[in-house]
Image 1 (cartoon, rainbow, N blue to C red):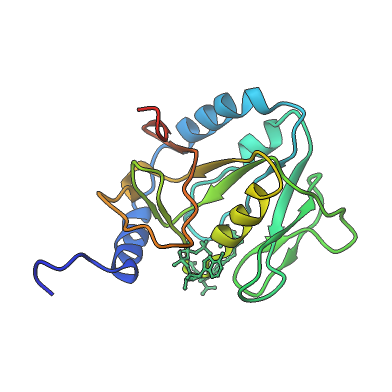
Image 2 (spheres, rainbow, N blue to C red):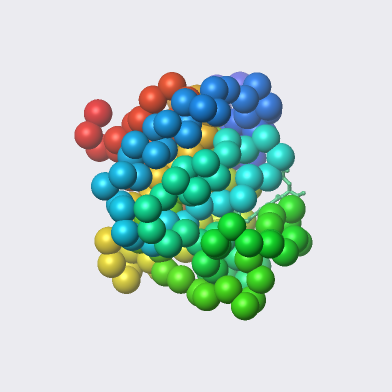
Length: 184
Ligand SMILES: Nc1nc2c(c(=O)[nH]1)N(C=O)[C@@H](CNc1ccc(C(=O)N[C@@H](CCC(=O)O)C(=O)O)cc1)CN2
Ligand SMILES: Nc1ncnc2c1ncn2[C@@H]1O[C@H](COP(=O)(O)OP(=O)(O)OP(=O)(O)O)[C@@H](O)[C@H]1O
């Protein structure tokens, strides 16, 4: 292995281990709320954190507009999103929590995207299901979408090799700053 580029599984394991160190959650809250201000009135997709993921819920609660959460409808298909008004959630099979079927399905215009790892070019690694790649590809085909990655700064990796399906992020918010992809 020496000299070879680390593969995605190794990068994912490295970033997830680093995630355990955590970071300044309040700094993430502040920055997320700030970058979301221009999206007032638009539909925001957040996520319900699993284990020690950075928590986007304070920013979701502060959003001035409709908020929805992802639902996994099955393997190898895009996520769908259901309205979340602070009500009860159901447990999903992958350790997720999502609104019940009675909640309206929505098409978000801005998404806070969970990440295992990221790099400064806006490439991201998730849990490996390809869910956000498929979802962003679909949404971007329908109109303008802002994908905002959210993670602790310790989850940054020097370089993530981009595959053909990988959808880059537009912005990354960490406890140490905001990375505006393509504008730094
Ligand atoms: N909070 C959150 N919600 C999300 C995602 C995510 O990454 N984070 N997803 C992003 O695609 C989708 C769900 N996809 C997932 C794919 C795999 C696993 C998974 O491997 N779960 C492990 C636990 C991992 C851990 O705790 O660190 C498991 O259930 O064993 C979870 C979600 C939609 N919702
Ligand atoms: N639009 C797509 N069409 C077909 N296959 C796809 C698409 N997007 C991703 N995939 C496949 O999904 C698999 C997982 O992709 P990847 O490792 O990039 O997931 P991830 O970004 O870590 O996961 P997630 O987005 O769920 O957090 C890969 O085999 C990839 O080829």
